[in-house]
View 1 (cartoon, rainbow, N blue to C red):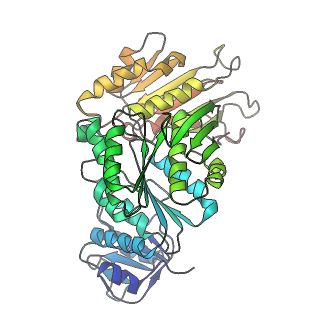
View 2 (cartoon, rainbow, N blue to C red):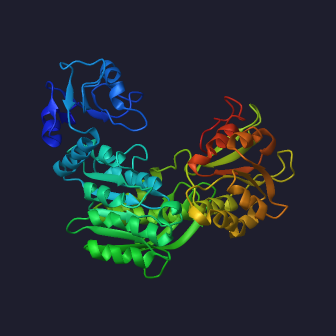
View 3 (spheres, rainbow, N blue to C red):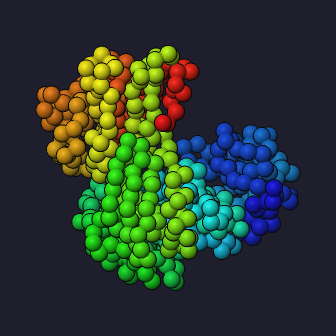
Length: 482
């Protein structure tokens, strides 16, 4: 395998001093996932990466990026000494971006960033060498790490950019220097830090500050803050494209057919109509696919090939993945479905997930109850600021709730929603996800469709795990998406 970085190139990019010559074929920040040949970057976060350098070298790391001589190491070990590891990683990302002719797409938004990034990976894979982070590496170390891992010969790169506090997106966007910048949506996520939807929108719009000459901005329509996003795009982009359901959109959702596990989208684009098949249920996935198609075409991809290759995308676990849990090793009918959307939540993404659940079809006459049920198991939405109680309460009035049979809630914030629910829909409320998880075997039944949704910090994923563990090993491919 050709080296990703030589020690000489690393030194030139970072201003560091190598103790000896070496060549790395990858980059790692975690000894648990390190592959032989990786450059180990000793970042200091929850723990000091310098404490793991000796272990990394023992596991076959080609070298290590360090700010000091780590314990257990000698000057003769393959090290690149720098003044500050985080700064050096950013310099490495900048150098990787500069040496590549790749068309770079940057993605941000209050929801759908990772799904849209993965849609783009699938849409572009048949048209060139694609580079994108395997996980949600979208913060101050994740973005430079993604760039630093990019091979020089990359044709398309997709970089996810996130934020928790004001002022985070602009420097990451300037580091990325995207050719195309896409905002998926803006909603009340991180309101605690920003105070208003407008504040969140301004921070998201800072992604356009990274665009170079000829850069394309892609913004969602139909939001209260869409004019604000379009105004910011006009200041920084050579061209602005809109996507959504408005008649004036450049990429418009003209028709939608929502199935159990596939969403068929009739889309209009400037050059004509196109049909998209998204192998996940949900209008929000359809709209994200529109934005991804706009970004792919703006980056020079063939839209027809991109539309076909979108069919290869599947939602990952915790982001809307649907799987069947088999309760009986012989009778496969004795099963229920879990929609695992437990990775994150805000009012917009929760509303979209409830629409998916409302459209699902339970199976009748096979469980303890005569009819299969649509069940929501919801954890707290975090970082919503002073209006968090009202935002939780408002979910009770969401139109999709009319088609949901039972809602179980977890956490002090979700208690506000639980108290607003009508008696016929109100399930159990528990203080912690662990408490609800212990009740899983009492609350799920054959024929049900169960949505699990909440912010990561609510630990609602424990409930999704508990539901999956109800399955019988070896029965019907337990845990496999249908």
